[in-house]
Picture (cartoon, one colour):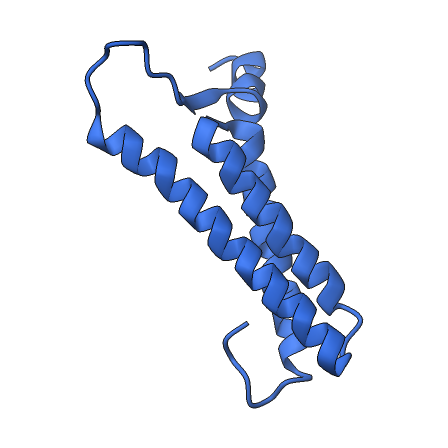
Length: 117
């Protein structure tokens, strides 16, 4: 594989796109993937609201605001993924997931009894 092809695959390849031509048969796997991403995005946004609400009540860590924002960004990435899956989106999701785990580890030290979010 040439270096330019490798760069294209790593950064700009489109792996999947939601396209249903008029009159085409329903593919259960595509429909499930498409709508599951919306359900998943909703879950991430609910987590963002819960974290932000916890911060409003307790204010134990200033890192909870970026933590809530990370959940929002992850939800947005799932909405995008419902329509198109590209290499740059996979990188965005990977980096966002790492940030979520790091922030969670830092914040949960302030809430020793809680392990949910």
